Image (cartoon, rainbow, N blue to C red; front, side, top):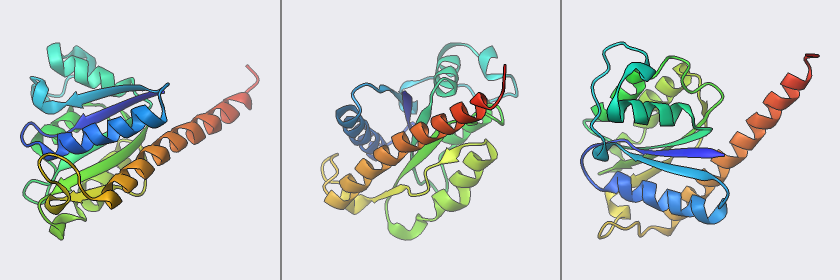
Length: 188
């Protein structure tokens, strides 16, 4: 199983801290899973200009092809101006409409306060749904107060991250079984 974790901003450290903690949980619980981190701060991405994702070069091509090859995607995003950052939105613009078909996508949100907890519901989930993702219903929302010195200190958040990883893997397995059963119905 290929799981890609995206740290969806090119600034700040909290989202990367949350993604790193999530990947650590996934490595421990699912050692056979192939885990890949895409920290958008580490790549030189170009803005989408309408081409197919495989027509880009360099980091843009690598990032989009890595996402397209995944079975599951864990998206980590901060809240900027009550919205997702432009770097993450650009990823969605670079990919085709059906990019997340047959993929499970789960969400981690980092924010300064609880004020924007519905950003994932009102902005991110509709985009993912439009792109045909199987979305893990419960996401993890992490506030400023849950961090101390670039570490997550709230045990409830860590527990919810464990649950998010479990739910992501279980949904991949469930949808894979469903697809196999549907494919077996055909006699060719």
